[in-house]
Each structure stands twice: as structure tokens, then as C-alpha cells.
Length: 72
Image (cartoon, rainbow, N blue to C red):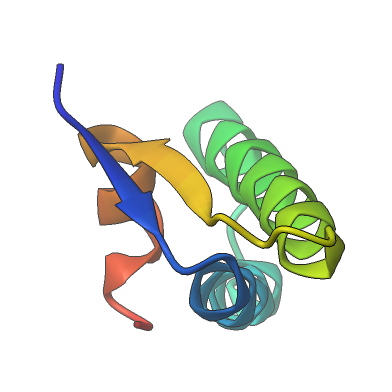
């Protein structure tokens, strides 16, 4: 599995956009719910990292990045 250190503020913004898209979809499948939960987690972690004093960034797996990359 590959990892990348990314700018936390940009990840937070992209995750929030992805959440808006996911919540707007008329989908109720378990897979959709899992995606939504995962993106909510990414958004929360990225927001916290962007507000930290050091703001070193946030590390995502390739799968996590893929989930939000369409709205990057």
C-alpha cells in the first residue's frame, strides 16, 4: 500500500467537497455508506491537522486519496 504526505488544508477542502457530492446522491447502499463514513473521517482528520500549530500535513493511503481525488 502506498502513502503520501499532503497539504492538510487542501485535503480538508477536497474531502468536504466529496462529502457534499456523496450526500447529494440518492444512494442508500452499504458501500455508499462506508464511503461516506471514510470521507467524513478523512475530512475530520485533515481539518484537525490543518489547524495544528505545525501543520505538517496529513498522510493518506492511495485508497483514501482516490476517494477524494475527483474533487481535488
